[in-house]
Length: 151
Picture 1 (cartoon, rainbow, N blue to C red):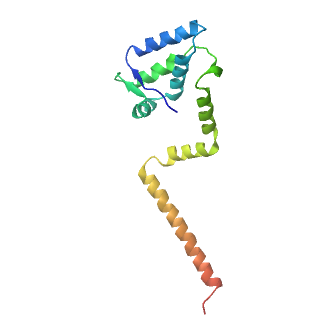
Picture 2 (spheres, one colour; picture 1 turned 120 degrees about the vertical axis):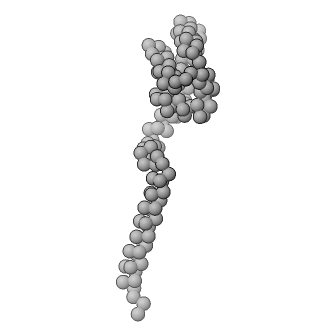
Picture 3 (cartoon, rainbow, N blue to C red; picture 1 turned 45 degrees about the vertical axis):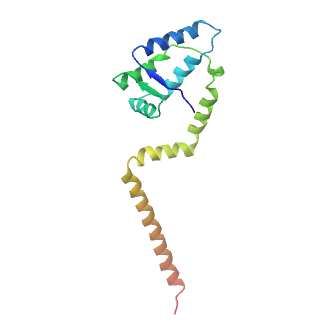
């Protein structure tokens, strides 16, 4: 998914609100700004999300507080009604939802979020896995030597 870069300054909220209001008032317009604002609202919930989008080069922020940007996007599409069946982002939404609804991807995300936050957790899991394999090998060779003596 490619998202264009947006610069956030003090005048961004009124500008985006005016563009959304313009799209809402005239039926001849396509709702591209509204769809983009809705997408950003779906992506941004916490200041950590702002940091991720900044690192990806999607957001360039001229405000001092990332919490302000979070509130800006969470309030932007409030009380805006539109039909997203003709959205240019509909296929992207559907593919992201299918990806997120997959059990494998959900389990992998939970595993990464809860158990692999730092490198020591990964190292300890690797060590535990190696010990488990060595234990199975020791058990196998002990049983193999017992049932097949060389004498």
